[in-house]
Image (cartoon, rainbow, N blue to C red; front, side, top):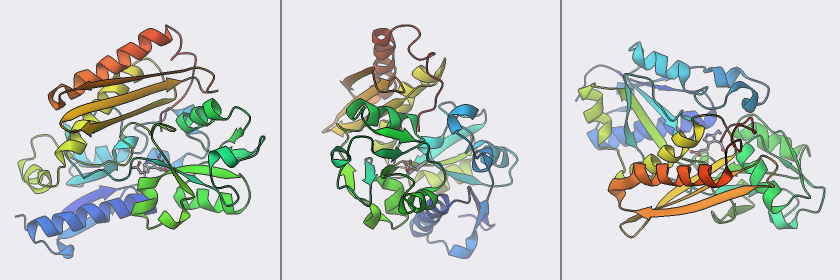
Length: 312
Ligand SMILES: NCc1[nH]cc(CCC(=O)O)c1CC(=O)O
């Protein structure tokens, strides 16, 4: 298809690299291309340089900004992202050309001492820097302490081994892609812990109007994943408009019907609002928006603005 090297932009974390390699492997298989027809271009993002809490600096977009600039500057041809880390509105001139089939959407409970969240004794320390997971843990187990836990997957597992916390949560999808499923103590069902919007989905971003790379990558698109993530991101876009708060959202197909569950919580888990909307796949965006507006309505003014946080 293309003779020149195809440059794939990605962050440099082990998970980001594994995802870029997966996209490369799928492109090779789809088009009969050789590995040396690709270059993996590692780009450091602002998010990779922050040591403190992401909530303090504004969360989403931080892991994609420099990669999107490289795409717009034609330094790379396509970018591979965790859709979960992407801002709900893409920069002008960019578009998502494909989403890979979604991985396991659940969160993983990981502990060296306890088989489940319910088994952690009162006063136990849960390490997570995700405001969503913090709030969901507090909702279920107000007697536990949540402590900040940042860094990539390997760093967090190391902190656990060092006894910094009794347990932590990570996305099953990331662990699976890293070949680390043996670290999972228990996979949490989504009715217990509703995942972050777009969790477990990998997206490929290209320049809008770039027909060559649209044709190259478009064949990898999994339509059902794209519809689910579209509904979830529409949900997040409405909620994110003013401020940030613990937010969870998951759309799934029930036969041919799209079913979206959404949840917002106060960071301490003391207040929680959730909803379910079902409809045709063609109404994906409206389902998400309707769910968000309903929750905003029920939570009342001030609910979102009273919490200073992100949605990972
Ligand atoms: N917030 C960082 C991030 N972005 C995507 C994943 C996992 C993979 C995915 O959800 O696609 C993770 C780590 C985690 O939450 O455990």
